[in-house]
Image (cartoon, rainbow, N blue to C red; front, top):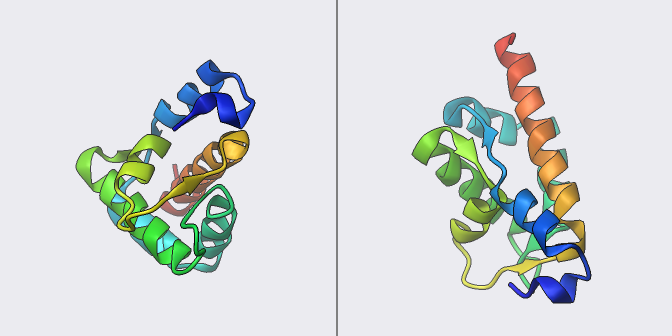
Length: 115
């Protein structure tokens, strides 16, 4: 990923890519298949998507669950790496938005669990 092309501070982009969001993978899967999960997936696929924009939500859902299953946390770089499609595009100037949506997802999971 060429961070200079994003016209953003490379250090800030690296932070958004690497900052973990703790999640329970089982609850994550359930939430991603709910109405709020679909809204979050819609928003994140505006930042991380395929060139064709086909099956983006399904691919992102799979990447999120795979990422969480490994260590009960998600980073955007893991989501990109675990995406099952061969070709991923990342809107570098909007990575902060994607990171904030993951944090929002974490909050929704905590609400469901009663934390």
